[in-house]
Image (cartoon, rainbow, N blue to C red; front, top):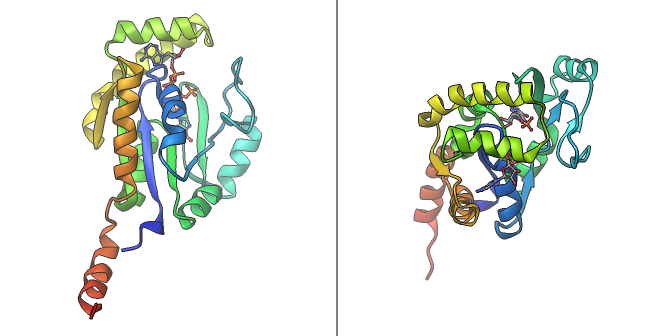
Length: 209
Ligand code: ADP
Ligand code: 5GP
């Protein structure tokens, strides 16, 4: 079996659950990986960088990308479009990297249905709804209305935890990051079913002596 075939790790969870914070904590400790930078029509927040956190575009550009089939998946979330570009993901997978996705529950459904063999999914949850509200308010990046919308969505997203391989409750950041690190490293050695037969065949054919 060739561990160089690449793998996908999906992170989902309510906005404000701590997905970006956790990724920052683990990114230097999980080997060669590529963070899939999504394209979005949402306005840029203070502290975010175009091309680093997202590719920020207007609706016209986003719709052109849809028409040209540039997205592996895309979704309308909290009133804005978000999409995952296919090209860099393909390149990273071919290079044997672990590809990290921060996408919503709709994106996870699509990615696991098409690439389930090489995908491990993790739902990141805040300990409670009131803690989520506190974190969104403390982050101070969204208006009151946007926070209300995100809280409303969180109640729906949390209903879909059972669609994921793992659940991490992000209470203590360091503990949650340690757990995520273990899962990320395990995701690399998930066995794609189409490679099992090849592996068994080669394993039986090889004579050491
Ligand atoms: P997401 O990427 O899921 O939207 P963020 O990583 O931006 O969430 O986190 C939302 C806010 O909560 C940020 O201000 C972050 O610093 C804070 N935060 C993240 N994890 C924790 C934690 N375990 N305890 C307290 N605050 C946290
Ligand atoms: P935020 O605006 O807080 O950065 O993200 C809002 C939501 O959009 C989060 O749930 C995040 O996971 C999701 N999201 C970000 N990029 C993508 C993407 O490319 N595809 C999908 N389906 N969801 C995304």
